[in-house]
Length: 190
Ligand code: ADP
Image (cartoon, rainbow, N blue to C red; front, side):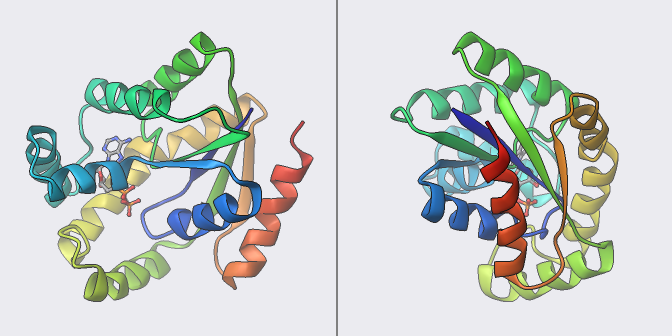
């Protein structure tokens, strides 16, 4: 199974590229952000908890996210591969993901990082905010999310690099060109 972590700051294009990976390779896509927004929409208890963190641009607790991820993963029908989008966001989550996959006889094959400069991210997210209606796509929350990314999430680049699983891709440019670079990585995976 080709399990791939699609990685990058908010606004780096993970969701857009994930859709293209699903279309070309038939992989399943797990977006923890989408899972949480769906819970919010349905007014569940989890949704209420998630809403309070997301509005502030904060991460939900690792243990809660790890449980959510395992339950979503276990509902997937057997597949060629899974794209993890928005998880892991901390070292603790990456360790939990490894454990979870190991217990199921599989592993993360690659972490594909989309790198985009900060000011470009802010621009993209403000633009998205105009149409998405997301409670976290406003300037204050965007700055907070980028700070959280830089302090809590970016250390995962080194973490995966040390395991020889990190692939860096320039996330600025045409969507299709970025996707070609991603495809080249996926095609090379055993
Ligand atoms: P983006 O990448 O644009 O920030 P996401 O849709 O991936 O957006 O996530 C939106 C919000 O959901 C995050 O800011 C965070 O509050 C919460 N969230 C999503 N995934 C996780 C996770 N793995 N751990 C903790 N919080 C998460």
